[in-house]
Length: 281
Image 1 (cartoon, rainbow, N blue to C red):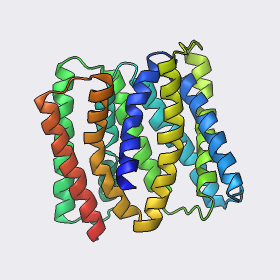
Image 2: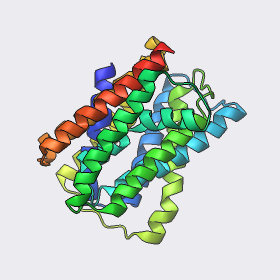
Image 3: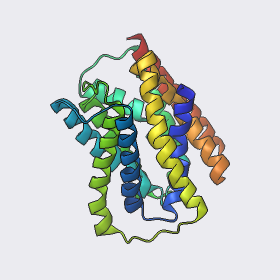
Image 4: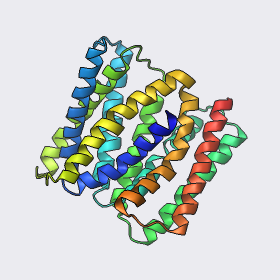
């Protein structure tokens, strides 16, 4: 389950890269969340789930809907018009590092020596990759959007991490997607023009993004959390840098350099160390 989740999550950057080469990023993101959210809520209703949420849950729905779907994924879709899927996936995969760093600095949570070493190691790996990519002329605006999106999701994770969703998990996921769709449609109308090249490849990529990373991966994640706990489940995030780069290389033929491979290995080691430290504590 953990491997399946990591593979689906990482592959989303490659499918998104395909989509935004033929469609306006904000419009297509809003449409994606509208479809995925509607499907998730319909499935949840068939499973007996209803929209009965506490005040804290509604707060979590709006925070995550705006931060995760609106900012994190919306920013990434815009960024991948000019940024390679491999680089976007590496930046996004630092989420466990960002959450741990914010917990340490803002919430004053204790982190073991292993966790501190992991934080430093992970960010060194990212700096190595970013430094070389920037020297090769990568779009700094796109990279900035990827970073802002990852930070937004990390902040949202800390803000609502104590909010429980009870037995309405899939319904909550659907509602979050609809919030994200609503948050993106305004900027889309203002900044973009609706024009899509509905080629078979784009339709397939959009369908894959909606069904697999959007819905199935989310269901698998919650099942995994219920089975082994959130902290242990999060350890599978250490696979995301490698899988994100590998899928982009295979599907999109994105070139990898030795520095990319070394940097990804360092980032993976840092994420794994941080997650192992959190499991032990």
